[in-house]
Length: 130
Image (tube, rainbow, N blue to C red):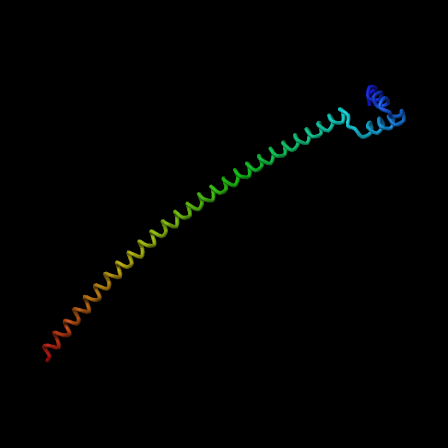
């Protein structure tokens, strides 16, 4: 507490002991400019630390996202290759089935023709015999 403040309090009717007690109390309780400066420095340090941690987290997040994207792209490429292979395999299998159906159709035509020829022969023989 400054000298001017002490004089004002004494003029206002405070005793010297009261002024001393008040001054001592204020000295113990009041924050000085140095105290405020120290708190500001601590706040600034904490702010800087938090900013650094936030930036680090952002970088880690971006890195993890980039890794995830790369892995996903690789999986899509693998999936496309697998689907392409399955498509080619399916085309080959469908072609084989069509070929087999064509062969079966030809065999059935031959068998039906042979059966018709036999039937005509049997009918012709029966007509001659009857």
